[in-house]
Length: 157
Image (cartoon, rainbow, N blue to C red):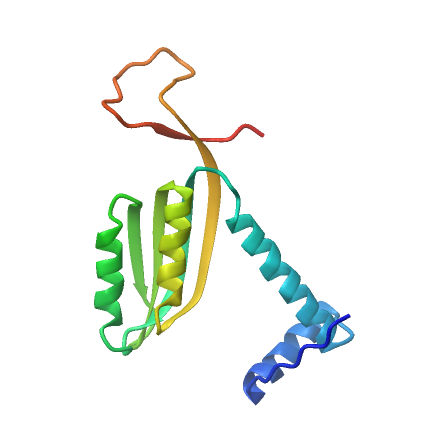
């Protein structure tokens, strides 16, 4: 077993201790191990090798961070082909929650999400990615033509 030492401020430590008691943990180490396992599994899920996906990227950002809102907007415009929709909720005078729904090439969606989450002032970034199949076929007779685009369909199972 490896030993890892971390430093957290007193307020976060006290809140973490409350969470541990509420969930019945006997020690901080047990709780931290479960959090690390959860993060590793989430990361593994994001590494799904599906070539196409639908996804939701959610994050909170601090609008006081110099030019961050403008940078985020430019990043989104630079990837307009991936973005199906974006919604903002103003939490208070300084913080905005944004949810961006994405679809397309999974590697590009992951790269977009990583770039947004790495921006200074973006916090609590979370990507929920679902691999899908891309095809031009219908279960029923086609009632329209595709003119060069494909449908993204959930995988069976």
